[in-house]
Length: 447
Image 1: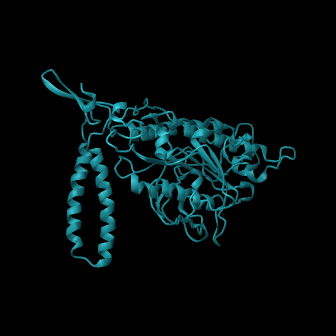
Image 2: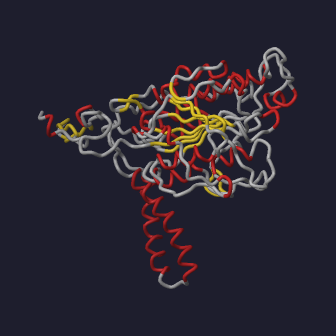
Image 3: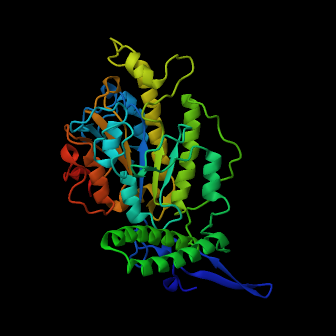
């Protein structure tokens, strides 16, 4: 076989029982460029985006490093991050500006961080969240435009919105999530057999007919209605692309290995150990969904904003603890709140590791991702919107420097989101409104 003539679309052909068979090849190193970070023909490996959320922040006294830049110190609460430090950036001393709106406890901070706007009420989602903005650019050709999951066990705890009235409900059951991802609708990219779904084919056919009708209708309506039809038509075109993807045999992906079937859900309580089990099961499924190119945009919530996790032998949940536990005079912080916050940081490290351990090209899946992690408060004890922290993880195909601690010096939390948008190729002169509007990206992490 002539290696120079190999293509990533090449199949092995033969004859079996008198019939022609074809077996696809996985993504071999010889399909890639010399650096292993793109295909030999120059096509880049796909870029992905994710978000991760945890509630009630942390204890800055034992979380924020003294040093900035590379090689920063690892305080007590940041300890789990030590094993993934080379993959992440820590941004501290961020501010969410209220712009005259009320401080909606456990709500304003994370909403501003994901939409760039201060909400007016605790039911107000001012606009689409950042993951949706990015998914509309990079997520339309995959089976799922976005995937959202929550370890809380409560389907109401979503951090993703298409618009103020359209939440993206999270998966909370590992069994149901597995079935959705790897059940009957899953097309294994490494399988030699490909059978298009009859249901998708029917939907695709109907959709094509509807689009023809819309084109004819556009010629008969006024300007305003034509604009509305154009917006609707654009959405249908995106849907058509997803149908096309499901009706086309996927290219082989060496990293894609459907996980073993899950038959039972873990217990749905709020004990930190139960939440940990759910979070890790959902994370592992999500990582493989990305590896199998079922989606390129993901969201995970470890807890809700008013984190209600509990621990055995202690009478108060995390949220109540932040307000009622006294600051230990010797330690200088709330020890039980520190326990809960440290469990969240441990799960953030696990989430990062899940993507870092999957090989892709010469690197890992995480090398071709950018993950943005945020929370709702700085000091949750007093519902502060200053001294907030955030993380990024992944190198986004070489566009991001990692291993850094950046002191944002009180500037807006929207700088992290704006930086993420730029890294993901979305060119906006600014992001956010009023005091949260920014054109000042985090230049320290941009390669």
